[in-house]
Amino acid sequence: MKKVISCMPMILLAVLLSACGGGEASPDLFGRVSERAMEQGSLQLTVLETGTDMSGAGCSGWSGWKFGNYASIVKELKRVKARPAEDFTAEKMTFPLYEISLPQEDGFDLFLCWTNGYLIDQQGKAYRFDYDFAKLAQGEWSHKSGKEGLNVFIGRYLTELEGRWIFDRLPQKEETSGPEGIKMEILSVEQGIVSVEIRNESSRDWMYGKYYHLEVTDGKNWYYAPYFPRRPLAFEDIGLILPAGESTRRSYSLEPWMPLPTGRYRVVAGGGPHELSAEFDMP
Image 1 (cartoon, rainbow, N blue to C red):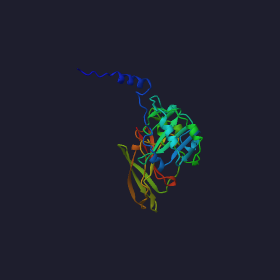
Image 2 (cartoon, rainbow, N blue to C red):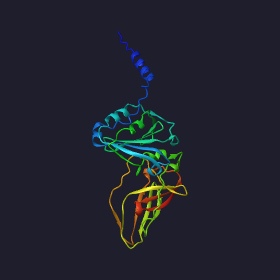
Image 3 (cartoon, rainbow, N blue to C red):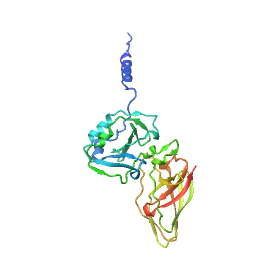
Image 4 (cartoon, helix red, strand yellow):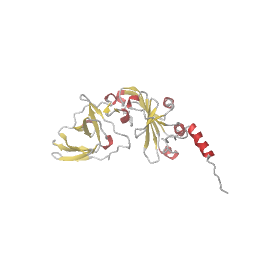
């Protein structure tokens, strides 16, 4: 006698799952945030309440930290269904804006930004995410700071639209004169690498470091160009010395910012009064 295996239970289960929304699994955005990771790190919430750009200089806001005792918050976030939102563009950003960071098992922090009902991850993917971040912000915090130094890590995805910068959202750069007698000149811009020559035409040795950043101009002012937060941008913290009367060549990668919209840029080495810059065009 042949055995007949009925497929009806499996078909019925598939229908029920589809009817309940089980056919499309919600992305696990917080999967690498474990209890062990939380024991070693803090929850940080950055709030931009109102403003004109994505920095502390152009908005009102604050940052808060929770050290321990925030597992219940993570559990609440994990329970929220994240629905992919293909319709999201930077135009849909509104204030207030919330960015949350949480420690992960790999030692790096997870950053997620919420605005106008959308949650954006570090890869630029957007999700509909129904969570009351305003209520979270109203809670108690182990430590809070003002808007000084305020920065949104995922800001790059909110400052570019259809291959063009939204300059109103970029932090404007205050001009500095730079170190006297130190010059930087572009040698080439090829395959995402900016090669420069630095000349010390002064009578003193000059000390600098490996830190650099990128700026873009609208033809009138210069603005900080945010990089893509796909992975942390880190620099070796060492001092380099360029003796008086000598020159050196350095290379700076544009990879963290690529692809770049067409425009006029400058690579800026160092910081504060010791900044050096050299301009180049991106077609």
